[in-house]
Amino acid sequence: MQNIKRAYVSAMHGLGAGLYSSGMLGREAQPLHGDLVRWLHSLFAIYDIEAMVRLDLPWWTLRAAKLVDRFLQQRPGATVFEYGSGASTVYLAKRAEIVISAEHDPRWHATVTKKVAGHPNVLLTLAEAETADAQSTHWSAHRAWSGYDFKNYVQAIDRFEGLFDLIVIDGRCRAHCLQAAKRRIKPDGLILFDNAGRRRYRAALENCAMPKLATSGLTACLPYPDPTALLSPDPTVLEALVDAG
Image (cartoon, rainbow, N blue to C red; front, side, top):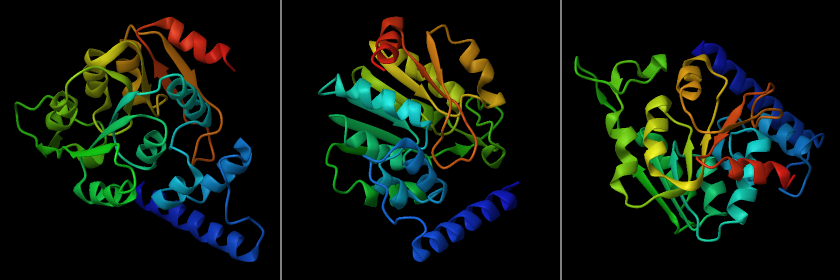
């Protein structure tokens, strides 16, 4: 499966380079362009953080990105905690007062650190997984990380005080991250849970009593829909976002 994924990413990067160099696809797709144009550009930017930052897109559904943008516009001074750093970190930094982002992979952490250098409101925290043992409880369902304990990663949010306006769950060990997020979200805050359609996350979402809004449709970097869920302790928060358009 990993070989297929690598081949697909390589093919899309190559195809994108050919389309750009031939002039068939404009090099820049600015945020003011329509969703369809930006989504098309994102297909050739898969796993390319520089291109995604240029597009000003997180790797969520475009609908979820719009709703989060709307939510943060209504909250000057918002504080955000993010599980899983990347282009979304820069996206959030442009819209929130403070962004704290936890990452488990040291190499990716170093890459993102360079990308957020111009955003002093971002604090990146490295929370590496540890080798699992018989007492481990915080497992990742991802096969590549099956031998690791992510307790340190899940509990990274507890390194910081206060409640958060927005918590983004888009990294490892997401079911446990959701449990941690429920303790640290403001009563009228918002939780974003990406890739909500994956089977391994189904039980965690179904067992969470918070009101939920599933967003689908165009998904950045992907040729198929991959739902992003929004949750809030206060159902009126989700209702207001939807009612606003």
